[in-house]
Amino acid sequence: MNIQYIVAECRPSTDEDGYADVVINDETYIFTSIEPVESIKEAILLTIDISRINPDHKHIVLHHESLQKLLNGIHGQELNE
Image (cartoon, rainbow, N blue to C red):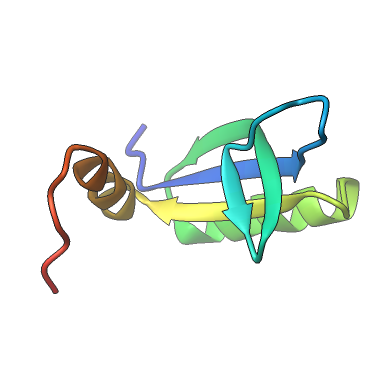
C-alpha cells in the first residue's frame, strides 16, 4: 500500500472528555478514526461517507508530506516557505 493521505474522523469533545485532539473554528474535537488512503479520490469518498453517516462529525485530510511538516513543528523545526 502506497499511503499518500490520512483521513481523520473527529467527533465533538465533551466536558467529560477533558481534552481535545484538535480545535477547528474554536470548537474542540476528538479523533474517532484515522484511515490511511492511497489517493485524494479515496480520501474524498471517505469524507463523503463520514459526512453522510455522522453529520455532526468533522474530517481532516492530510497529505503525508503535510503530516511530516506538523511532526517537524512538534520537534521545534520552523516551516520556511
